Picture 1 (cartoon, rainbow, N blue to C red):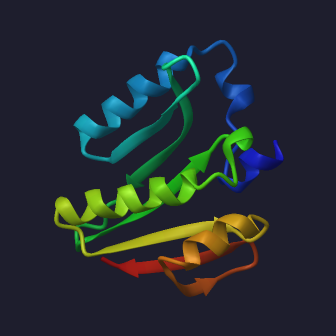
Picture 2 (picture 1 turned 60 degrees about the vertical axis):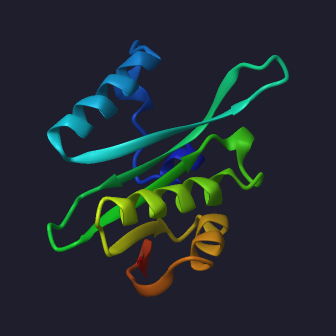
Length: 137
């Protein structure tokens, strides 16, 4: 719950009984609707199998060359560099599709995410709960 709160929502109660395939279908639907681009991040485990570690999303396109970006890494995979790799991958995709700026809104309690995002983004504002960072790409 605490980790999910960093993401701005905790959908576990609503999603009980949903298969993991639901999330993949949602990502595909959002892509085809033009509302989001979702990357599912995986790493090879010791058996040569892809293991899900997190995701990155480009969404809320402003039709002025910008959008919001979100990175989510499963708690057991945090502090291994995956978040930064996902964010850098999203920035590259954003450049390739012609975007010029990205916005990242992070819960103030999520100090590690703020710290790594500040390496690529600049602080552009905050409110009681959220830090807003932006990057020209």
